[in-house]
Length: 454
Image (cartoon, rainbow, N blue to C red; front, top):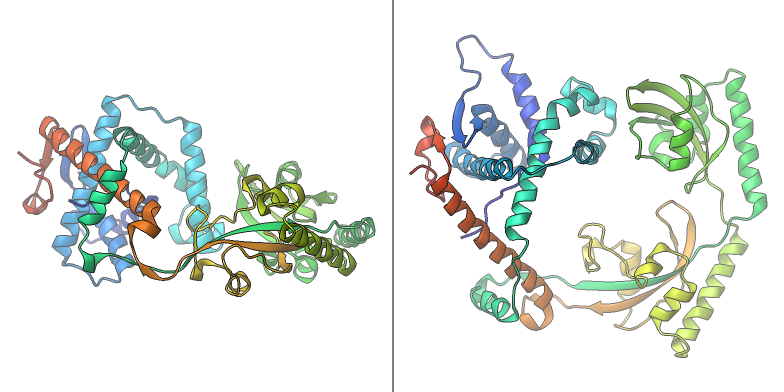
């Protein structure tokens, strides 16, 4: 039996808040909310199910399943969560306020980025970020408690090679997934230094802009004209509300020390040089605007980096160094700490499908054989700085149906998750027997995967 979705996305809570606001506009005589189920000491409200139903329809385009079937499935997922929460309470699972705050900040940053700015986020939900966090605090805490219980239940689950093979044999041949080409890459990076004259040029430019602002010119207008931060320049340099720990430490230290309207001295960070103006402070959050000017690498220094990489490449080809040894000795990028291996930001591992690679990277490595090294190629670092690198193609697979020889690690992961699912399902069946559970109304007639009411 396939493992159900036990941990609910925090995104559903945003929908829940929206749904709760919606109910205030309903006509008199309509039931706003009611208890549809109880698990231990935890209740499930009609609004909980409706909120997730709205989220489901938004994600699926309203095309899959009847309303009753979908709501029954959603209710069962909430029942799973409440069962885990009940166990967390019995086990006295603790989550610190600091952990909850960090998780809320992490999630909120993601969702605010989807809206484009904190202001648009607040406008949509008609409440401040601080209010929103307070409304969600208890629910996020419960989610984290549930996650701890789930991890405890499955932490000792291991998978043996024979179990992996048995799992694979149980997959019907016509159901084997088709896997796209996958690549593993390493790199050696040379970052040309910024020369002293260029740094002085940037500082002089920012000093001139700061003087103009202090004499009365608009900070926002000058940011539009001169700032090299593409994300904020079009908004007059405004960054929106941010809390501590979300910006460069040097930038943050100065920004939080400013008074309303005050303009900072020049601040240096990894991104370049800034001047900052405080727009407003809301509790532990501030909104600032800034002008960023990034020092440029000179063409001569870039050319020197390319020549140096040519020499490194020749040393590797002459077998004076392995690629891994050359990474440790010559690379100037943090990736040198893990052998120069490129990490896929979408998955967190070192495997890329072709459509997950930057087109410029794919163009370079598509011509290489496994074990080949590219010519030095220019690229921009994450902070926008110019650099050169050589790429090493560690492995490449051709498109194929999944098989044990080529895809053992992937199949092992599938088998492990399947085994964890069976362990979770067995735990659930046992806990249902010993936990008080009651389901009310029409939803009590649902055909569930598990027998929730004995």
